[in-house]
Image (cartoon, rainbow, N blue to C red; front, side, top):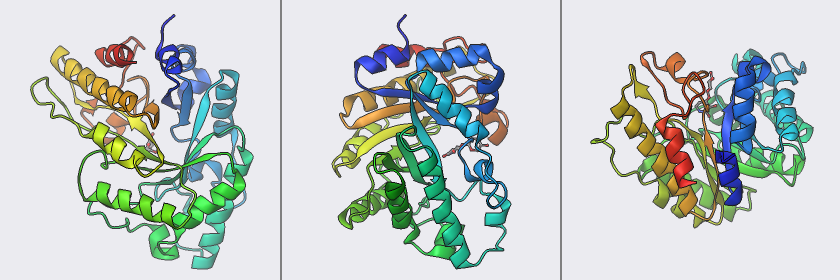
Length: 320
Ligand code: XIL
């Protein structure tokens, strides 16, 4: 059967999906879609620090292990997500009780322990996630405030030492078109590489690039030229968290416009030689982060809540 997976494989491309823990645990229909449609998976939440080490030194690997073993059984690549983020931190990290020195040591241990555990099984890591603000300055996170800007280079070096074969990415959103954040991301990657920091790739989340589109209101995206721009730095690029949220209820016109955006994003990645993977941030409306974050919005994904193909799926397939 022709699936996204078989088509992507023929192009030497990875097509991936964020993995929902509940679906993986107990939903056979979901598991089948995950296995047949994708050759890459990203744990949606299972590898975030709060889920791996809820108390200092108390590791809870179960959900992350489940994603990795599913991927191994099904010959899929794993994108590890994410080592350094300001969100989804355990309370003992975020509550301010650690000194700067202790905090740095905790972060180093987290990066090293996690990357070593999955060495050889997680091929790609989002080492740092969302480190830039919209105005192009470094985001004022616990990491910047307490450790200073060097935390970014440190995290890449720790990760490289822990698994020299893993590809190491910086990942962010709203850098898909020309704006101060994209410029800052470009300069950051360029400067880090000039300093010898081991950074192999740039991930573009591509969340809701265009919100609630109609067929008449889809502007041209700059995604392809953005991917080419960064590829020019000598790094791989990837679409890491694609979704297109719609205002509910949906209708045929909205679904058609959504499909057109999925088509363009897929075409942009396919057109750029260094675009090595394209991941959707949930494969199905059955499990979606969107309504939880933005009430009244949803239906953002390629399969509907019954796991049936939407126009968005058909367009991805048509391009692949
Ligand atoms: C989101 C998950 O989808 C939600 O289930 C969770 O509650 C919060 O995080 N950018 C990222 C992802 O890098 O990790 C986020 O995932 C979505 C935004």
